[in-house]
Length: 411
Image 1 (tube, rainbow, N blue to C red):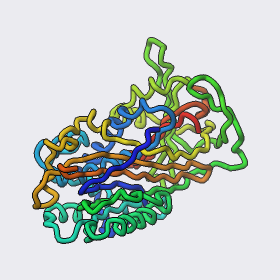
Image 2: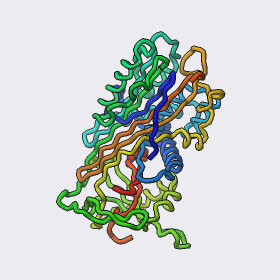
Image 3: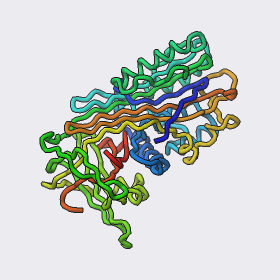
Image 4: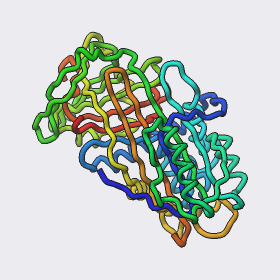
């Protein structure tokens, strides 16, 4: 997986996975929020399509990236804003454009069954003319409280302050969000978003039934992995391949977490080398149709490897360019005049994400960190056996929002 070094300029916008809960009351689900959730899903599959050529395992938080870029778009204008909105499948302005922030407040509400918490925060250079409408929009819709900082006087102290917040927000999963020297005296703003998930299966796997079993790799060789097993307790769908028989189709299984609001969806190709064909068929509309067709699996057995993924950081800049976000990365064209009233042109220097997931007999823990750096111009069978590469995602089973997604080539 591609390693990324984050070079930061005057403004840094960060989306991270963590467990903080927003202090604002969760909003009622609205049509605008459903529009934002559907937009998130289209962006999720668009972004995954850009990343699927990467070798090996893959895990990311489309929601984290979508939330970070939506907040970035709040401070953008003109073509910069329009391109960001188009890539995010959001309208460029109006209530639906800000509803992406409402999603965070909705998912931040306390739950008795699973942990799913979201938070936003801003650290801004004291004394700068931050636009009140920008601060108000993020505070009111995303719950992002503004905190004064002094990057100019002591940038490393501010870096440590943000890192402490990130470590606490991710329950220790991100111990050093910003590395030594990453924050300099030229910084003006750090915007952070945190989302953390931990949930137990509605029907857990019995650890005594977990055994070493074969997992067929893409090249046809096999390796032994800890394979969990349980009967029933999931929804199932089998999708036949095209008539030319070169694609054998795939199976889908949806495993609910405790409470039934959230679930994991596993997409399993019919052959060990069938993942690229399945990835090529994947779209937001196709996924919605497959999920709608899923039915209770009855007494069928389900086999799923126990796995833990913590891939290297993903640099998402080029993938976003391919999705049409061009002006934001161009120092001569970017327009982030909605951030503050001071002079000087700002542009996005890079977008990077690091994610983590742990799937066990008890349930799942997942977290992710996304960073957007904005710089100044100067800078089958009746059983479901996941014993070959597969896709998976964690979603709101009721509203459809895709929170995390990934690929397992080798558990």
